[in-house]
Length: 216
Image 1 (tube, rainbow, N blue to C red):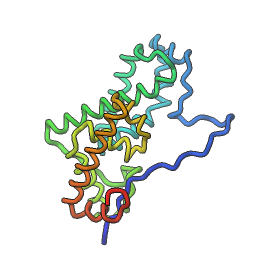
Image 2: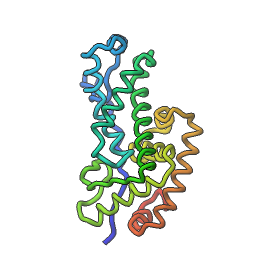
Image 3: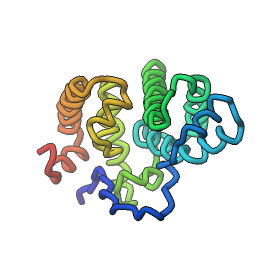
Image 4: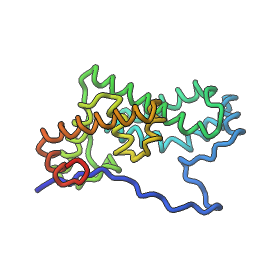
């Protein structure tokens, strides 16, 4: 029995009516709100966390493939955001800034793991955007997927995950990684080549690769 492991891309949302409420991670940043953050206003800081904690958690989930340190990493992200909030001068720059800090924290976590030669994997039902059946063979596939990611260069892994797991546009990936579009394209190209070669050496992932239509 083969394992069906696929990277899930979220469908594009339908246009939002003008009077419809905004989702939490589409926080309507305003100049007054940003000024409140600059003033270290506790209510504004709580509002930021409420608006963007889900986005930060999701990005860390998909990049790292581990949940045990998630709470600490999320706190680290917001602590860094608050300490550097004065760098954000325009309301529309707030979300990209927060995403770039999340990527920075994730990169540090990846490098720390490498230094300690530590890998952690978890059941597929804890990875909502990596779809797999609940049988043991499928769980093995999810673990194999993250083992393959662990072999990538940290910067290339970040670009790969944001693009193909998180489903971000190329320009957003480049902004989150704080590099040019050309650089992120080069990283993605190298990451895809390395990822495919790693998959070919794994029985589970080789089957998944053959059943797909992207990396055949």
